[in-house]
Length: 386
Image 1 (spheres, rainbow, N blue to C red):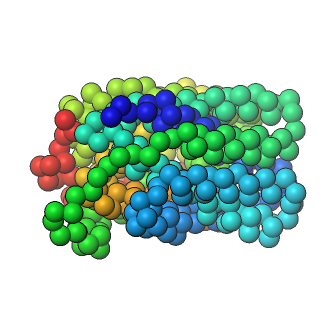
Image 2: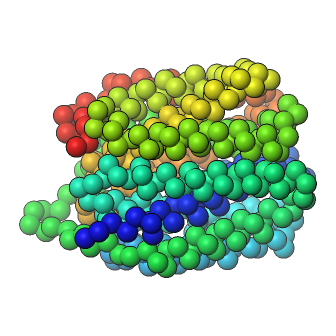
């Protein structure tokens, strides 16, 4: 059966286009609406904190009902509907509750769609990066365009733009076909708890919690950080996009890299680059050359770690647990790790300063490297993707 390449790619394009409008500029929108760094950190923590529960809940339902796409479509629809509510509110309590409600649905589609994409690809899982790269293209499209727009237009336009992009994301799920994977029942089903309890899987999950803990200050405060150092909104958008362009280049060549290098090797090298990246951002924000180099390392710190993570999950969890496995990976890494990093950076951004915050991020990736080096990816069947 032919892979529906463009229909799968269109979801990633629109989903990450919405993310490209949201991540770099939402903190600026909150700051413009009078929220302080602690409140911005808390609202960001609410946003990613629901990933601890929502993806696991939706993943469990999807694996038991075999209705992945139906769940993806409804959660995408309600995410767009709820986000429109930001147009009518203005105080912290209302923002907090609406953030929790919106993110409960918004955090559901991506891990389920990852499982759907891999189901379509089957033995051609190495082609995943060629589909996923369109998400990076969508991110660049909006991060540059909206950056230029907000230099001349009020930032109050942002919720309208994001709502439109979320609606487009929902529309792409309508045209996505169901995968036709048949799950074998010739053997006794493996209990998911027995998979999670394996030391290698526990270590893998801890590594990705630490990775996203380190990324949280970047996602929450990078745009504010640049504005404090007198970078324009256009320059901020271009720096964000530079990182994602590097990510796209990596995705283009990832098929060959996966055949040549082990998942373990890609993960460990990406963690080394992550340490370097956070040190550079925290120490050399006024050096545009080093700041651009740090953004190029996004190819490894996000792209490399994420591709390795997706394939590790596919190998660790059997077919009947793919939805739950991808959900667990997203909820613990982007959810728990992102929530703790958002809260911590929000509380300590002003008392300790940006240099200390990004230094802690570098240390977090250093610990992740040690854990991964000792425990993750040593088994033979995880060495290469053929």
